[in-house]
Image (cartoon, rainbow over all chains, first blue to last red; front, side, top):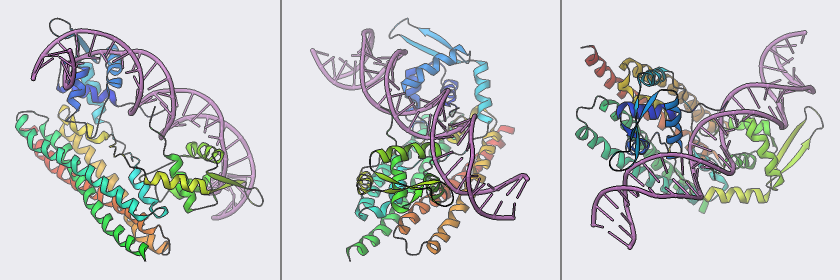
Length: 187
Length: 187
DNA sequence: ACAACCATGTAACGCGTTACATGATTTG
DNA sequence: CAAATCATGTAACGCGTTACATGGTTGT
């Protein structure tokens, strides 16, 4: 058995918080909120919606009246219970693969400047990401002052920012070390 | 097309550093070194070794003489070039899915104590991991004082420790916030 | 008119995980 | 003599990504 999909719960969760969403809406909701730690593509969203509906965890509200055709969904009581049950289940902490670290690990097989290059690119990437998250951290309380979920949303953003900050500091540390190595290499 | 596998490069890298390794050895090498950011199972190692050999990136040295039967491998010049070439290629920074954050994100759908429980479990897990890495950081220079790759290995360990430290600090921050929410919940 | 965005899907593919299978050799 | 470790694989499965496909509506 492969790992069980959690896409269904992500989608259920969005529908619990934003009832009357279409598949397209769900994608848009995730963009700018869960995107940096959880992403779904249309290719997964639509089939999942279909199966959730078959299991009576959500119900469709066909709104093909005015404007565009769209199928919107609401979570059912059963769906909410299923979601809540999953939410209490233990999280197994899994370790993601990290290609940058793999390349650094084998760094002695190439010129040091190659590793330096990787880390500089990395720094740029995560600096940009961190900026985005810091903007979100500022705007969220203004946009959703009365939202019950706000403290939880902020916690996820905070996680992202702190991890990125640590990564940035590591990158600077790494650059210092690598520059030392580069000097040795030239001798 | 799905994402191209990088297992081959991880295995090539290990063979570059430890020539004469068997599939079993490769797995053992990774355990205790790359394990926290890159892991391969036997189910992937043996087929990859086979295909690497067919491509002349490694050569097998059947050593069925004394002791156990084992097939060991060495990286070829071509293999080393292939690996070095990959090492210089840009790393696309991908972010992994994070189930803990997903559950925290939807935390308002359940009792706050559920989120608290998750974070406490998380803290235990990463504390243990951090301890392991700190031990490795201490022992590595003693075990491999003359290893050219040592500075690179230490950088990966440092990355792990710093990220885990940031995660721990976030966890404490989160617990503080959640305890405040819990008090409100009781009112 | 045209671009940007809204909206919903299907199909193919490969990758990684899990389960399963087998057996030899060393250590206690 | 049993347990741990060494050693090497196969098979099934589902998950997520990418590419492909289609067409309506709004804004400039």
